[in-house]
Image 1: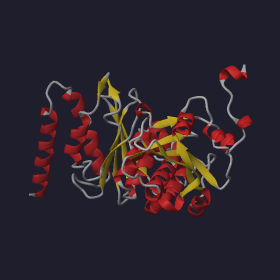
Image 2 (image 1 turned 60 degrees about the horizontal axis):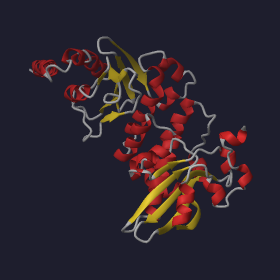
Image 3 (image 1 turned 90 degrees about the vertical axis):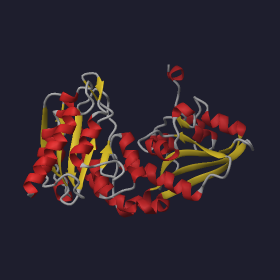
Image 4 (image 1 turned 180 degrees about the horizontal axis):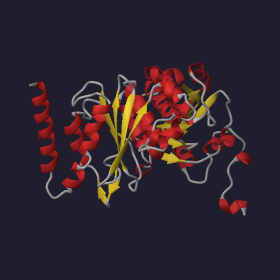
Amino acid sequence: MRTVTKMFGRLAVCLFVLLWLPGSGFAAVSGITPFVMDAMKVLKLEKGAEDLGVLTNARYVRLGGKTTEQYVPVLEALTACSIAKGNLLFFNERPEESLLVALANRKTMQAVVIRYDGSQGKSKFLSLKDSDIQDPEFFWNATLGAAGKETFHIVSILSAWFANTPYDFRQCAELHGHLCPGILFGYFTVKGLLQKYPLLPGEEYIFIASPNECKDDAFQVLLGLTPGKRNLIVKPVNKKQIKTNTEMLLSGIILKWSRSKQQGLGIVVGIDSDAIQKVTKVNQQTPRNMKILAVRKLLDHLDDSADFFTAEREFPLSKALKEQLMQAGTNPYVLLGMMPAATSPKTEGEQR
């Protein structure tokens, strides 16, 4: 009886896929169905299983010039995963890339990655346990299969799901396209900022992203700041130009501004590198596989974000100083006296 019920359940799903949204290319959409169902068999999970999760770049990529949001309800129907349940995840991707779907078993830390072009597909099994990722050849071998160059994206974001991280944290990774130490540092900085420098009525945040790095995407998600709204100002500077405190990883400058009073408070914010080193060691030269393991260790400390947050400097903020700091062509750290003007980056005209 159970076998018969299961068979009818699968038939119902297939009928849903075949009849869903006539005229929207449902034949191509339904083509991914056998790959998804085979993946669940490999992972030994049934539809609606507690340990089943799905990660995809659907909604972001295009197939045959068409957007791919129509694949999302199909994946929901096949797996019973959803955003509300926290087991349907997405990652940002360039539109011209292939459609990718990764099904994962949280209990076994295994995944099956599907790459689909609208008519044909292929899949690859991956074991994502720490012991497997420690293998220096892990990423090399994985990229040869269906996961391809997106292997790091898939492994890192699934790591966040394995650790049952908060939804807003996974949103940061979704926008950025993968999870890395920079996204973690941005999350730590914003959460520490909200705790130690909360907005008062009538105030707003403006963030000067300098240096501009991965962490800036966390500010966009968690604070709703964007360059288009002119409350996220991007000012590239190199690391030598901001080497003012070797014990701190500078994130940038927060302007806590009151429009009604036309004044505010400025805070140079960053991450306490000593606190990070107590948990794990990671730097730009760290291999990808070890970066993932470092990230996994830090995921256990998301509730302790304020412990990693550091305010290098506070300063009163006038309207004139605010406009100077935000202005193009000015080094904000020179204006604040945190470095000599001679180290300020030269413009293209000055270099000539």
